[in-house]
Length: 215
Length: 384
Image (cartoon, rainbow over all chains, first blue to last red; front, side, top):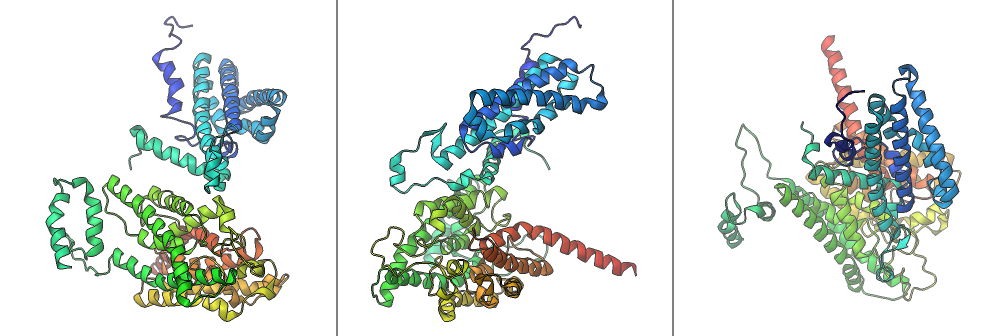
């Protein structure tokens, strides 16, 4: 072990946590994990649970892989990664089924599909395999939160405009409907999730000059 | 006119660089060029400039749309009176339609131009003229009783998501007017389809007589009630329920003649669209497993929005294919798919909108292969 011990929350480590929230956001900048962003964002509650599940799966598997990184033969590393992710996903799935059965039913197959979420595999390959457990934990939490934040934002707008509710509670007052207001059916369809994500990317790039590509 | 020119010249310096209202330059420029042909000349190289700039082009398209607008207004009144069992003079019918349709046109223009101006101002561009036509097309493809706030929302969606995110007029992939219609169709289906929405007053149900169904010929045909179809002359003249501007094939043909005579609409696209529709219609006639497939292929051209789409939507110069051969392929496939969707898919009674939007997306690809093919052909010739 090296003599110079880095403080747990050094500037570099904090950056691992905060960068994925904006500058290298998995969804809006790296455009990964779009499929689940389209599928589970009709309502806020499932989206939030989904985001939380991904945070847990990602943080734990990042740490596990990081601990094993010196013993995994590089030829079978993908299989080892999948085994770790899959066991975590099964655990999360069982917990959801036991305690949040309704939401688990709404999320249906998409919890299982966390296994194939490209963000998780990507971070394991790119980060956990070559970094220490603590940094890997921060990186995992950071990236999964970056993913989750976008999921929650998209779900908030889709639920508000598509169903008139937030977190299952009616927010748009009854009197609006009496005046002829209607819920927007397009918001419930998957294409609108893509358009909302697109709008978020648009706003983010307009604000964050670092992301502007030069031709 | 003279005094207006003098006034504009007088206030112009305020809007130039360094002037008092420098920031409002785009707005001033838009109004000035809208009223007078700009005196701008090219500064480098030799160019020949036609006097027909984009504003003039757009004005001609709006002019070509006028027959459908006027007929549409009359038709709205006609069906309302028919549905309520009243008699009315020609002028009464038209006036009722005017009162219903005009607010939709105003809302569409106000919202659309408002957003266009805001974007041009923000980006420091000139205001694009493209919306002059879209603003007129949007009301014409909507049912008469659509709530105005929905018109405003759809217009805003079409201009921002359909056009401005791609860089404004000339950069859009999809036809903005159809984007607006598609938005409403999927967002508020109960206001955009069914039998009640096409006749004014039918959704609220005030004094509608029992024998009146309000079903469009297309809906009747899709349901297999071929005997309910109105006479061919009625369908050609457009005395049928439907979206405001799409019913009268005659009025649309007048518009088509204006577009073709001035050379603004592409004859290639219009003709190949019609041919594509006929081919698909004939294929269905061959199989004819249900009554809808049995109706003569040419009757499809009179039904629903086919003629309107072929003349005014498919020919949109921005979203259509650009190459001569590409235009023929593009048009043919629009006609082909429109009839295919219309007959096969019960969920979407009118296939024209979806067919055009689909081919809009494919237009750049078609052009790409036409150009590649041409390069290959010429290379071959060069080698021999």
